[in-house]
Image (cartoon, rainbow, N blue to C red; front, side):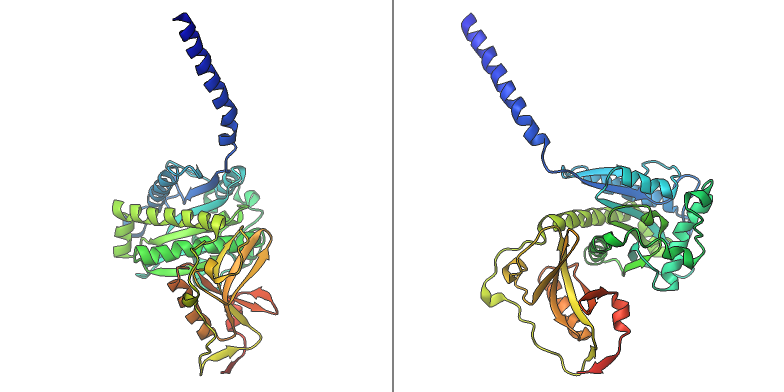
Length: 374
C-alpha cells in the first residue's frame, strides 16, 4: 500500500515537472497586440456640450465598452489613457501609448457644429485639406489651453494657427498607411453595419496623434449638436453599437496585418477580368490610379486565388509593410468602378490611390492634374 502511495506521489511529481518544462513554450507565444484606448477630454474639460450632453462621458463609456470586449480576446492587451472622469493632458496621453510600446492608438471623441450636421468621421494625422478639417482639429487641440505650462509642453504650439499644424505631420508619416487602413475599416463598418452616415476618412493636425509613435486614429462618433444623433450617442444602445463596431474594426485591422485577407482558391472561370475601358471618360495625364485592397506585414503571392479572383494585381513594399493593389488606369471613373468590383469581392475597406512616376501622391493632388477625353 505504501509502495502504491509512493509511486503515485512520484508519478504526480514527474507530471508536474514535465508540465513545468512545457510551460515556457506557452508563455513564449505570440506577442500580444497592444491597443491604447483614449477617451477624449475628462475632468474639468467636458468636451463639447451639444444639446446638453457631455462628450467626456460618452467617449469614456464607448472606450470602456471597446476595452471590455478586446480584453476577452487573448490576442489583445488593452491600455487606457483614462478609465475615470479625470483630466489627462494631451502630451501625457501620447506618453502612455509610447511607454506601452503600443501597436495601435485609438482616440474617441464626439463632434459639434453650429448647424444640424451629422455623421461619423475618422481622422489620421496630416495637413488639413480644408477649413472644416482644420476647425475640427482646432476644437480638439484647444484643450491644451486648459493645461498648466502648455507652452513648454508643446514647444510653442498654437492651436489657432494653421502654420503650427505643419510641424505636427512629420512624426506620423511612416505610420500613415496603417492609420488610413484602420480608419477605412472604422468608417466602412459604421456605414454598412450601423447604417450611420459616413463623412469619410480625413487628415488633420491633431496634437494627441502627433504625440504617438504608432498607427493612430481619432474617431468622431457623430455630432452631439444634431438633435437625433446626439440623442443616439447619449443612449446606452447607441454607445454599445458604436463600441461594438469599433471593436470589430480593430480586430479586422489586426487580422489584416497577420493574414492579408487570405481567401480560398477560386476556380479559373470565376476570375474577374477588368481590361475593358470606358468611353467618354476623362483621363488624367501622367497619373496612374490603383485600388489599394490590402496592407500588412505578410508577403502574399500575386495570384487571383489569393485575392478572391481579382486579377491585375500589383504590390509595393514600404518598410516592413506590403501594400496590395488591384487595377491600374489613368481613368478615374474606371478606377471607381474597379473599387466597386473589389468591394463586391469582399474587400470592403479598399480605396483609390494615385501615383505619378511610380511615386505615391495625394489623391486630391492627382485630381487637380490636367485631363484629356478618352
